[in-house]
Length: 98
Image: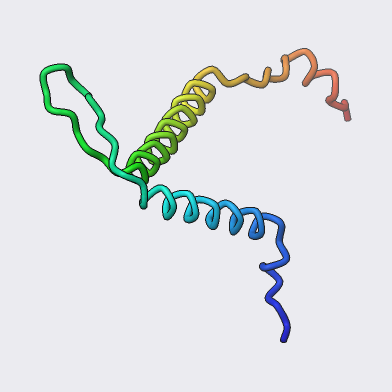
């Protein structure tokens, strides 16, 4: 049985390892007892599963990374380098007189 070409791609192999590892972490931490998180001093502590904390942290990290990349690219495009235009003297020196 022949394997598809994309299975031999290192990006696919690395991505598969990461996805399997994340699934393992979420599955085994889902089985742990819920944790109490005190967000504000006057509110009752929230009970969350460890897996939901991990998933929330991953989503926040992805969103923050994308936001920083967006802001970085926007700032760089405004201050991009401008190529100098040719001076009139240099364009006249390349003309031939007939």
